[in-house]
Length: 315
Image 1 (cartoon, rainbow, N blue to C red):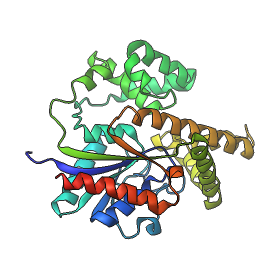
Image 2 (cartoon, rainbow, N blue to C red):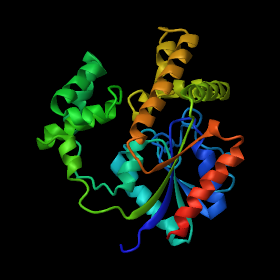
Image 3 (cartoon, rainbow, N blue to C red):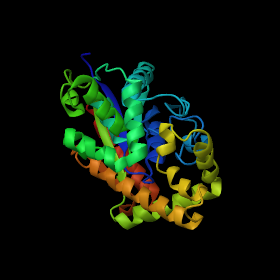
């Protein structure tokens, strides 16, 4: 492809205002939003995933939201394939693709044109690895990955069981680490010209306060019911291990009070936001906008509009 497709990528930690800003950019510049959130893909989950409501979408078409079941297998390779098609469709209709989400692996894999090797899954190997984690704990399985592939381990949280299992599975099948495969995954340059806009707070405590407020809102909206649904009917699916749900399970088992479970949930969400920021800050091309440095939300939007306009005028 001679001409690269322009993409506005609105990224940042959870609860930092990505969705609202992406929608406003799409409104201002005639765009449509493509989600880059690994949990908002599930049709059965709404509250705990902070899936945007019809009101929040403001009539702007959104892609890759609620289109999969929690029992479906879904990988970053699947996401990249679907997101590429969505971006191509949006652009072909004369619209501006606006990528929005906080799943750094999805964002980077898509925009850097990562090509995934077609290593098929081995059910026997996966079963063995999951059973090992169940018997010995997630940390014990993570230690196996750390010994075999420290580079992948540094990019993966010990409780992200799906990714840990996949990395170990790939090594057992091919004899090559996931890191080695990833180094061979960029034979072609990106097909996108990207303008990155990051949302955050200059003062970390203000982001943490916003996270606390959002979780309180989710509790009022009924996130406990979503978590119980996963716990009782889909305990082994990927979504069941997500932050926002798994923290309720000790409460459901009678091992923890609801108050303590909520405290753990807020703590784990803050830690997740910190990991997101660590991931995104490696990208020096991001134009960061901190909400607490603007007198009102409209001023922040204007700053984002100016960044987007300057980017598009160079096309």
